[in-house]
Image 1 (cartoon, helix red, strand yellow):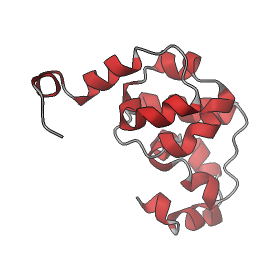
Image 2: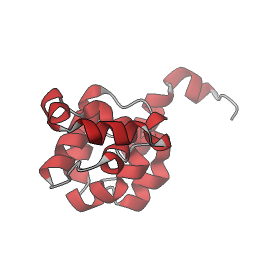
Image 3: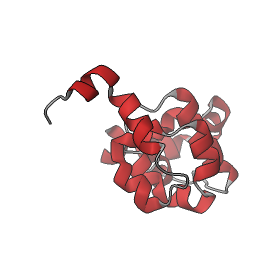
Length: 127
């Protein structure tokens, strides 16, 4: 895409943030449509604008987003785990995609080696 004056001066994160500010609630269809612009979600957007159910349904799309900061990814992961999401196998770990960076050390230590080995063999996890 051609670089516009706006995107060069303001930068991708600010563009994403201004796009995201147009919404109050983020159902799965909007989260999917945002794509990479989802990095503009604030911590408040994640905590208050996405229901637990919608968050879980949206994990495949959110896991494809690159550039989450540490606070965003850990907020998403913590909300997901609080809502009952369980990492029982490599598939459920791999599904987290880029969000895996938000797993805290105690959660990672609680995963069996088999789960981690299964996940790293999956192409979607390696990406």
